[in-house]
Every structure is written in C-alpha cells, then in structure tokens.
Image (tube, rainbow, N blue to C red; front, top):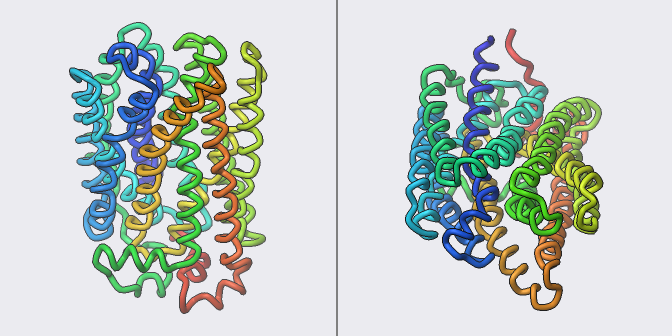
Length: 435
C-alpha cells in the first residue's frame, strides 16, 4: 500500500475510534441517567462540559504546536492519552467524575484532529484533497456507527462501564500502531509560492490573520452553525428514538446505525462530487456544503413530524438527513487548506474544531436538554422533539454563511490568478501531484 494511503487509513481509523469515544455517551445516556438519578439538563452537562472546557483551553495551543513540530508524534500521543482517560471513565464514582474523564476526548481531538488534517493536505494535491478529506471525515460517521451499534450491544449485555473501558483501550492500541506505521509528510508539499512565503506568526497573530481572510471567516461561521446543530441532534436523537418510538437500546442503535451508514456514504459522495465539480467552477468547493445543509434541514424537520411507530419512514428520513448533513465537512476542510497558508493550516482547523467543541459538544447538548426541560410543561412528552426541531433550525444560519463564503470564492482558474497577491488558492490549484 502506498505510504500516503496507509497514513490516511491509519489517521482515519484512529479518528473513528476517537469519535466513537465522543459518541458513546449518547448511547449510554439512559443507563447513566438512571444510575446517577439525573435530569435531562444534568445529562447534557455530563455529556459535554468536560470535553468542551478542556478543548477550549488546549485546542489552539496544540494546533499552533502542530504547525511547527512533528504532527505524527502529536497525533499518536494525544489520541493515546485520550484513550487512557476514556478508560478511567469506567471507574467513575459519580456524574461529575464521569464528566471529568470526558476531557480525554478533548485531548484526543484537539491534538489529533487539526494535525491529521494538516498532514492529509500535504499528502494529497488540491485536485484530490476533497476526496481524501472525505475519507478522513467519514471516520466521524464510522465512529458513530461503532458507538450506536457495537456500543449499544456492549452496553446492553455488559453495562456502560465495560463499554467505556473497551472503547478507550482500543484507541490506546491504535495510537501505538499509528506512531510506528504512519508517514510524516513534507510540510507545504503542494502549497503555492505565496502560501509558502507567508510569515510564521505567533499564536494570537496567526488566529487574527486567519480570521481576516474572508473565505476562511465565513467557512468557520458556517461550520459553527452546522456543528452546533449537528452535534445537538446527534447527542439526543438516540434518546429521542427510545422516547418517541419506544425502541430498546439495540433498536435505537440499529436505526442510528443506518443513519451513520448514510453519513459515511454522503461524505464519500460529497468529496468525489466536489473534486469533479470544481473542474468547472471553483465555487463548488463551497457550493456542495451549501447544497448539503439546504437539503438536510427539511429532511430533519420532516423526520421529527413522523408519528410514533412509523419506523420505516422515520429511518428513511433520518438516513436522508445524515446523508446530506455530511456534505459540508470534507469540502469545507479542504477549502480551509487552500485558503490558509501551510504554516497555519493546523491552527485554522483547530479554530473550526474549537467552534465544534464549545458550541457543538459544549453548548449544543446543554441547550437541547434545557429546551426539552423547559418545553415539557407545555408540550409534555413531545418536548425533546420540539427542542431538536429548534436546534435543527440553526442550519439556516450555516446555509447563509456558506453562501457568503461562496460569493468570495474565485469561480475559475483565470479568476483565481487575480487573487495571487492576497489568497493562496490559485497556484496551489494548479499544482499537480508528483509522479
């Protein structure tokens, strides 16, 4: 197997295990809530607060470190430490000690996510990058599938503590394999002259430079809305299936697993579709994410209108939602790798992941739980469905921001040449892969 493909595969497998660790608590919400006697708002805090606070503190420093040092080593150590901390969750004595171990997911993602995407950008040329990013980004869906199907089986037969121990231990083993077998690519291998000549900046100055780039700024705003909506839905949909449709843990895991498969397929379709369409018009790099969230929103709302017991229709709609919502991820990160200089790619990725951690994994589940608790007095058992409908509405904000990013994106190679002085897109798009 070529070194680039082997490295991409290892990075993706380890990312999948990391996402399994993050998603597994969605499967375990019921047993954890029952054991510790928690309300929905408290469950949302347990599921999110440890991860969000830790990620907010370490994401940018680790992203900045990845822009200057060996990324393979950082990925291996951070993912491995995250797995070890996840294993400690199996011994949690209460809700808050369990929440504290959720910080392991933050260590894993803050150190592993930005560095992995920076490596992939140096492993694949721009005309193949959306497809490569789609392989990596589908690891989130694969991880969710592992959590919702395998995790549900483990939880039902062996309990939530054994489930956490298995997930954390698997991550630790895979991190060791990554350190031995992955390739550290040459930084800026396919970057333009303009991108390579960009000055190295200290942490906050690098953040400011990235934010001042209009396309990058609107991509981050769009991603923030999409992550807030998507993570909120993903965290609570498993519980919604149990409450609204009366499914068992394994039944809800099966439906959610189908949705994860839809997301995997959607991610691969989006990457291949983007790489094909940008040959005609470069703005499709952002147009595909815009189309995806525009189709996901109505699919999600209709899914929440399905009456209890209509499982076939509900499953079809949630699969359609998962298929389209995944369209924004790979093309967006590929676009960031094109507009951010090679020396600041990991920092740019860390900024978007930070938005996902604070808003998506942090605010989202808590907001949804609070909405559910607050609406219960008016709509009773339907409160969670109404809360999910509200957070799905945030996808409209993502669509608007993607439209603004697309309006600033060059439409063709000739147009791109006029951006050379201020935007590293043009020359990097003309750079071909080495023989």
